[in-house]
Image (cartoon, rainbow, N blue to C red; front, side, top):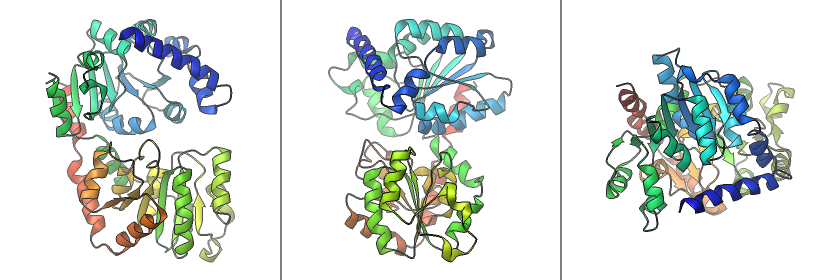
Length: 405
């Protein structure tokens, strides 16, 4: 099975190089890894024994950040190395003040040996998922503790299939698992893995802190005025097409759209759907006269979304018509009921909020309208949502106690 895995990594690298010719994200992926070992050698001293955090992308970074920041606060001189698999994480956090940040070289035996020789971490911490055989194996061989935090497992994953011996063996390299739910504990136990703690999800700590320390956005506040506002976060074209009908039927509501991709082509597509919308970069051209502001605001930058929700009444979260919904907890931390598409089965918090009648999955404009009407008349819903987030926080402290023992 290992030879199939190695061939797969090789083919993936070839495909990325080909895609980089015409795809901007693939180009960043390839270009960012050029001379990567020289970059690491220049910035990292192996004698410092840094803690290594690896994240798939930006969402996983936000999930693991509470643990990283807590460790740094306990030991301010402790060096930290952060790696990302995806450009969407690296490009936004490459200047993160608390760590040296790099792309993770692709998972080959030689890359893993070289990377770990250069970094020489005292601990390795992966968030939620990202299971790389060669990195895990070399960490195990070097007796460097490897932790998975905010892990979540599902029965359909390869680990729990008849053909999954190779993947199950990979899990045996992990020193300890900190998982989100009891199902994950039971699934790991079913394949003989008991070095598991039910810690919960560190994202609750992250979003709770963000809501408590949220940065004010004066231009957004002026745009919203006294209007009710629907915040549409991390949207894709299918999401945006549904919101056109909604906005036409609710002219008394403001709509703020923060798309997942902010390339020129996608932004132009949104402007075509909402011809009277204004981009955030042009918002300061308006006076403070509320009557002059249009109904729709398009956020054409990265990094503002988590603060936007403070101005919302209801949130629509994108991604549910693709591979899966984006972060709904950032909105929930502000007490906003959440609407999203049908692909939410991998997200425990989505299931929980649906059960609490604080979230709704939709598949059409008609269902969006019904969900919106339901949430505009619901009583005490903000309290119920905030209470849910409040009762779920605390995973970071559970993990820190274990790591610092």
